[in-house]
Image (cartoon, rainbow, N blue to C red; front, side, top):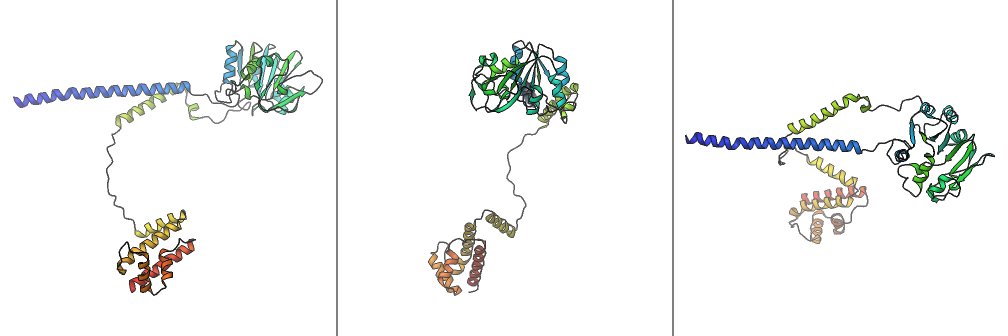
Length: 387
């Protein structure tokens, strides 16, 4: 009766403990899942959106997402055109077409189609051919000075912005008889043709996400692109009629399959936690590896040679030779060098000066002297052993 009672007590005492541990482990797993989910969601929501220079959707330093967002907040309708067809579909007489020079704006036919569009035009950082087609009344006259530039003109957009950090940029002037307004030393020019304002700015740096906060950069950028009720932003990021490059593995996954992929990843993580084994403490174990003495000597010699440690190699050779000869000479390990030289000279029949130079001389100057030293030590050790 007593044994049964004890067994029952043990079972009763142990069972709740196991259940408590399982319950605690379950909450730990749930907490880990919640932490991982929150971390993934935060990373997804706060991750920067990379893109090319002056891409209206890019949050990188060279992108234009900040400027486009500010203009939208002011009530301007912004059309982010990805191709010339989208620009032509959205262009009306009351729109402003912003043409940003990129690596993919090189086709003359597309430039002529842009030049035929109605409405005002803002050309940003154009190359020579783009400027000749979209702003033919403007030509390059030189460069501006580096630093903060004052407007020095009566253009309302520029005078309201004040000093702007353009840096070193091209300067423009009139190419014909049309009146051209020059601001910031020619970095910003404007003229009117057929009732349309055509504005050219030689650099896009002050419009980028990283430069908007400098002096009047944001004010000038917003004044230039926010003058009309509708603005069309055209900064082509790929050649017209071609794909944007090889698709990544995530582009090949259908939208409805994304959740399945993430669920599978979560299952793999949970399975790893479940099947993982606790790693115990390190155990010292003698490995059955035998290294030959010749390999050790060869490896050590290569290390000395790679670091050009001829002094340490010579010291090792001399020390080993003295340790082997000392018992034969009847000398202790701390014997005086003079006594060692005298004993070796008597055994070998060599002058003491030569023996002293070999056993206690300066380090070898090069590899040849080191090899000669090894031979001399071997010769002395052999003569001492045979005497």
